[in-house]
Amino acid sequence: MSRGYFVTGTDTGVGKTLVSAALLHAFAAQGLHVVGMKPVAAGCEWRDGEPYWEDVAQLQAASNIEAPLQSRNPYRFDPPIAPHIAASQADSRIDLAVIHRGYTDLQNHADIIIVEGAGGFYVPLNESDTMADLAQQLALPVILVVGMRLGCINHALLTVQAILNQGLVLAGWVANQLDPGMLVREDNLATLQHHITAPLLGVLPFHPGVGSAETALRLQIDRL
Image (cartoon, rainbow, N blue to C red; front, side, top):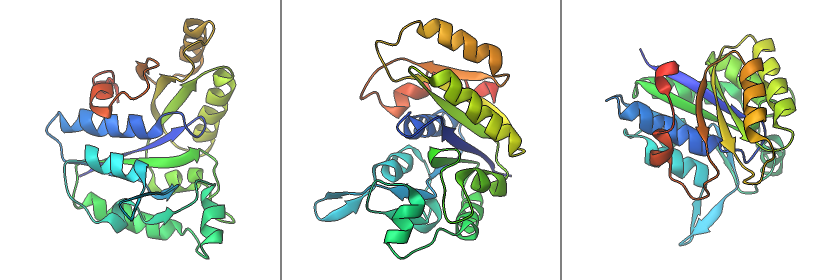
C-alpha cells in the first residue's frame, strides 16, 4: 500500500520543491519506489523551443520510477500567477477529481508519493476549492515548509491552525532559512518548536543552489 504526503508552505518561494525533492531522495535511499506529483504548475520557461516547468522537472529528477506526466502533473500553465487565475486565462478550470485520478494512478506505481502544493495552504484552485481542499480530498498527512524570515512565526502558526482545522494531520515541518541576515533566528526557531507539536524534520541553512540530494541528508524522515 503506497503512502503519500502533501507538502505545503507558509508562502510561495519558501522551498517546497526543494524539500519535496529531498524527501523523494530520502525515501528512495531506503529502497522505496518514489514519485513526485505537482498537481498544478504555473510558471513556464522555454528551453530549446520546448516548454519547461522547473518544479515538475525537479520532482521527476528526484523520482526513481516512470509515471505518466498527466498523472504527475495534471495542470500546467504558462504565467507564474495564482493557479485559478492562470486557469481562467487559459479558458480552463482546475478540477479536484482530475487530480485525484492522477494520484490514484500514481499509487499503482510507487510506494511513496510526495504531492507538492502551489503557493500557500489556502491558494484558490477554482471558484470554490483551495489547496487545503485538495489535501483534504487526498486525505494526506501534511508536511509544512516554514520560510525562516521576519514574520515566519505568525505565518507558520496560522498555517498550522489551518491544517488542523481542515481535519488533517500535520506529520512534520521543515525550517528553511531564506534570509541569511535574519535576526535572532535561533529564538524564532525555538518559539516555533514550542508552539508546533509536530516533529521538526530538519533545519536547512541559507545555501542558494544547494541540491535536493544534499538537502535529503539534513532531513529526519524516520520522524514521520
